[in-house]
Length: 222
Image (tube, rainbow, N blue to C red; front, side, top):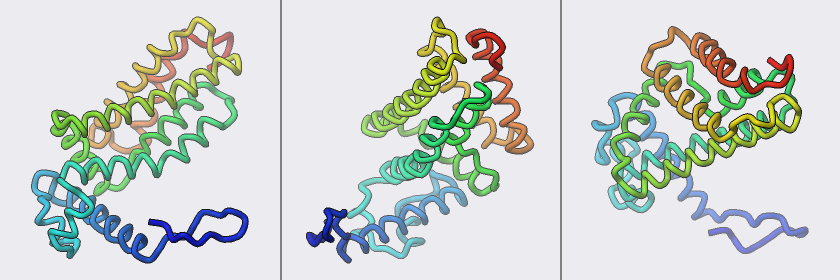
C-alpha cells in the first residue's frame, strides 16, 4: 500500500518500503521466469525451477503468483504496458504516408525482437498462450488484449479517414480484423525463423498492409 503522507500540492503519495520490496520480489520472479522460458522452454520452466533460480521460497512465489499460467499472463501484460506509450505516440503522429503510418503503429505494438534469445522467448510465450486458452481467466485476458489492439488500430484508421486519406466507405471494422490476423501471423512467422532478419519481415508486412488499404485510399494517397 502507499504511505499516507503526501507532499503539498496533492502529489501522488510515496510507496512504502514494504510495497517497494514486494514489487522488487515480484519483478525478480518475472525476470527469472522470462529468462528461464527463453532458455529451456515454457513446459520445462516449472514453478520449482523458477523459484529456485529466483532464490525465493515456495510461500513467497505463491504470494505473488498462484500458477505458472499467472506468470505467463503477467509477462504478456508487462510487455503490453511497456509498449503502450510507444503505440499512443505512433497514433498521435502526423500522417505523411498512410502505409508508413500504420506500419509505425504495428511495429510499436509488436516490437519484434532482434536478439535470438528474445525471439526464443516469444516462441515459447506464443506456444504457451495457445495451450492455456482453455483456462477461462487466461482466455478472457487474451480476448481483452485483442480488443485493446483492435481499438488502437481502429483509432488509427479513423484518423486516416479524418485526415482525408481513407475513403468514407472504407470497411474499417473488417480492415481492423484483417490487420490483426495478418500481424499476428507475421509475428509468429518471424519469431519462428521464417524471415532472415527483422528488416525482411517489416518489408513483407509493409507490402501486405499497402495492398490491403490501397483500394480504400483517397486520390493519390499511398
